[in-house]
Image (cartoon, rainbow, N blue to C red; front, side):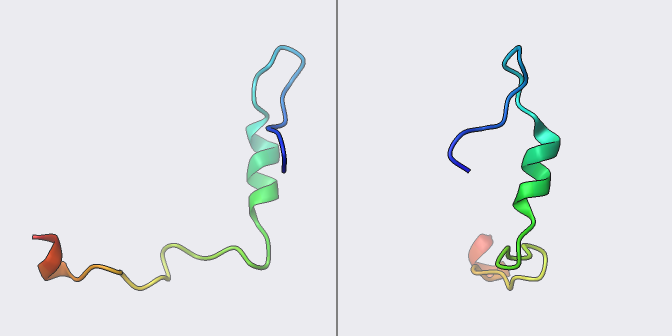
Length: 42
């Protein structure tokens, strides 16, 4: 997507952005392992 989809008055069409974000190669953030351990965060 090169540009954000907008209405006639310039508002972003968020429902189109949400629909376009789901693709076969889209990663699942919740399923990803943490890159920083709990001890490193403290």
